Length: 128
Image (cartoon, rainbow, N blue to C red; front, side):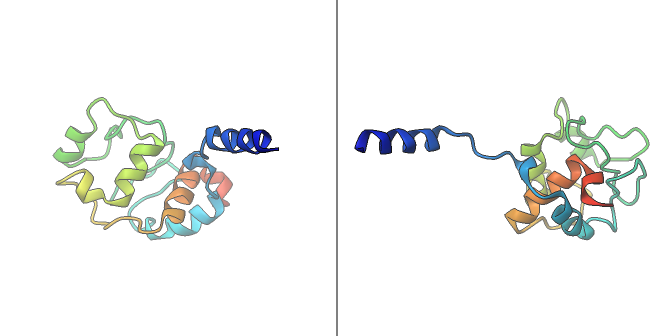
């Protein structure tokens, strides 16, 4: 009995943790409302900030018709917006990219962050 229990615990411990994309895109669309004054996720339309359509996997600071801050351009050299980089940046934009134009202080709730990233992965699934 003890051996079975230990094997189950080891299997659970070895199981991968859910990826950030496992969030809820519908809840992410609601949380994204705080971002909508400056960003659009469902279409390639820049506002005060660059559009976020297809941002996951896109090279950082790569929208041709958007003028990024020099700090963001430098930060983005050779990098893409993957889920980990988005998560770090969205928690504290000014700490990650000193000199960014983004005025937003950051997403405070981990659930909102996971859900926003799920929404950015698939805005259509967010119902918007």
